[in-house]
Length: 356
Image (cartoon, rainbow, N blue to C red; front, side, top):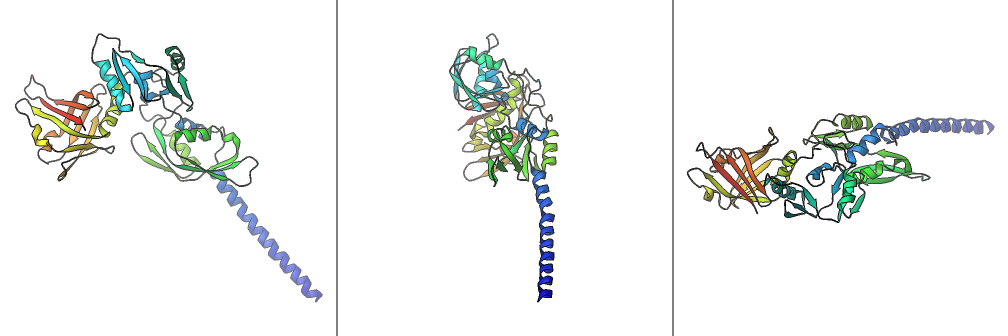
């Protein structure tokens, strides 16, 4: 009996030792996995995440001429005596039209106060007058100077994190759905005992290329490799904004052909009943409820001062005559006028789209 107890004790000790070793062997793997995805405060990566998530204030430079603030729409502005209600980005084109309408005016965008503005850290402030507004504008970087925000690459949301708060025993899942929430999280990393990223996460470059990052190293290198690969459009002039404005202008809603004519004849009736759509993937189509004519569209920015709209509807008649790169002669909230050739040479063609 004594022999049996002794051997039983020895067997239990061996099993316990084996189990303890087994548990110990698994601990480093768990710690290593957590460390691989752990986001730490005051690191190069956390700084890159924060810079990518900053509010880009350059999109409305036609209004405020400042890269560090964004004006909250809707607002009212007065340009060369013309009062303009700005409710969406598409209305920026109305401001530009008013600026370019005459050559002997001041071209100053006068804002009707009070308005709200958003700073780069997403703080929203009410501004009561021009003097207060100018104080914020004075803090902006100048045209094309280096600023902190990274605009050539963006995150595809949502992104999830496992966050362990200080003095907590169990982590909670945080789901980030936009840049503002991501900036808030990266700005408060010191408030957590640990935060790990749930990989993979996806990013998209300025020209629409999606990139997947599977760990911290890939995430860091992806952002660093795309910091300076595009024109961040931090100019204060107005022509440089045309491409983005034109893109939004065309992809917002449906269009009909209000006029298509040559020097010799008007062919507008050939397109009666057809509704045109230009989507964000640069696909176009014309549809009359029975027939769908597919095509493509593109913006030719070879000369940023004189953008061209390129249309291609293949060999479908009568849409094939639209296949060309058209000069933009007029754009306003309800229409887009295009031309090819010149009246002097006798080869002028005019194409006018009207927004439904």
